[in-house]
Length: 303
Image (cartoon, rainbow, N blue to C red; front, side, top):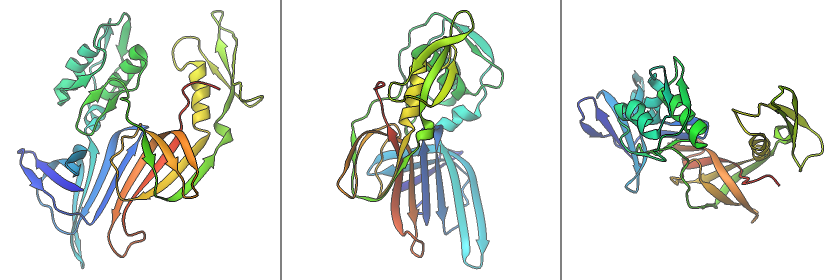
């Protein structure tokens, strides 16, 4: 992996090979995290960091901290950065109510001023009112609009393209697995959801056909998650796979996966929930490159 930095004066600087690398992606965190450690003093005031693998961009983001230190072993610089989605998380949106909002309006007011000029998704106006409370981040505006009006989850690619949905990717085969843990978590499963009727009473039942008894959840008829989604998410989270492989593959966090285990078993219909990549120097255990994934089941519909 190759790393470049950019100063406030737009000067590009080749950073060289770091001693340690830590890259994290998580489905629950809009911004990826990158941490680099160099055994030298990087005295340039870096504002942006870029990482490439085989000419493909893996990470582009803002520098949160650049820490220089020294001891008897010499100088060291630690750089901590978050991907470009951090710009949306860190900036507050002007509170207002948008009537018949559209992705075009969201992009013009909240995305393009922060440098996001490529926004992909359904751009027509949609009937309704979209309230933006005081204190909302620009990411909360984008996510709230997509979930409420488009029924989707937004995604920002490593090169800063904003998708108003989660783009589909080709299925990935994960093999050459060095470590595997399967976590079966029956406590995540939901047996039934009680829906609130127009009278206000929770008297409408949505049952999980795969469970005879278990946990109960209550949900309003309108707004929030649908009953089927609540049960489906519980089923998806009931089994997690923790996988470790050697080297690095630039796989998007939402990708579908088929897992080939060390014992020859094949697990299909999985989705990547999180990824951690590490590069450690000699003298550490483990040494070299490693990549860890957390996978969950993906259910298109309830069984």
